Image (cartoon, rainbow, N blue to C red; front, side):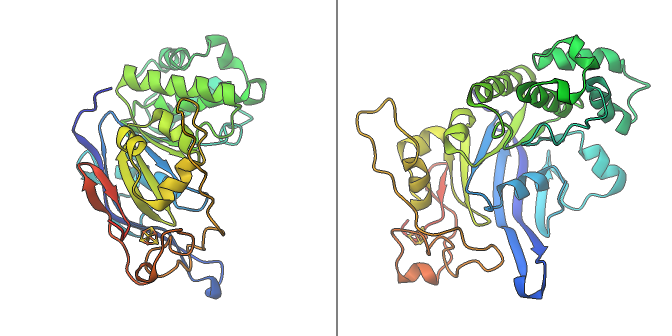
Length: 320
Ligand code: SF4
């Protein structure tokens, strides 16, 4: 699809640090100096191993988490330090869909009560025909109105995730963060939910920040992909650019793990040695140097900056 070249979100040197559990564990640098833009109408995919900071940046974009430093502009407004009524108002524009649909729906409430909640929180029940809007929402996500009287435990995993999507859509947001939104679902249900997200994007002109540990899934849905490693974005490119050429050795390794069904040559899988280091004590220089098959002495000392190597294709590696 064509993407409007209008910046919806601009993250500028965003850092999110957490205090460690004790003095010895120090400061956990979950997100460390990220700058990127998300265009209106695009799906911006973010991929990386567990603990790389992708969920933290997702939660920060919807201000469930306050950044430690940096600015986040949503439609030109800096939302990084909003509080109180302004923060509440901003939340209408930025919503999130979580990984586990069972955990994020109140088991004691019917689907109708759950979908009514966003309108109650924002005191919109007087001015709006909320019942009609709720019926519209359930139909939009492929459920039926009889589901409204059900409780979450009476629905399948896919149906519960559809409720999660309906709730995220309730206030007509500009951007939705999908945080591992299909990871907990069976593969066949995953495909249905991904198709639904794509349909809704086309119909409602949505923008997604799509987080997954699975590059294959991110590839299927994204217009652009950012690869994260230990709190940093190491490569950002369009889907087509990344498919044609990967520059960063980490992206190359992630991609080599995807089985190729439509190509004659099957690339050899690159196996990364060792675990992801702790974000409270990241390696010096390039954070990937302890696992990188192409690392040299320079990589232990110099921090690579994100550089544009092809138009719109950015990479943080000293080789380029
Ligand atoms: Fe590997 Fe060095 Fe590039 Fe880092 S800077 S990805 S260690 S080659």
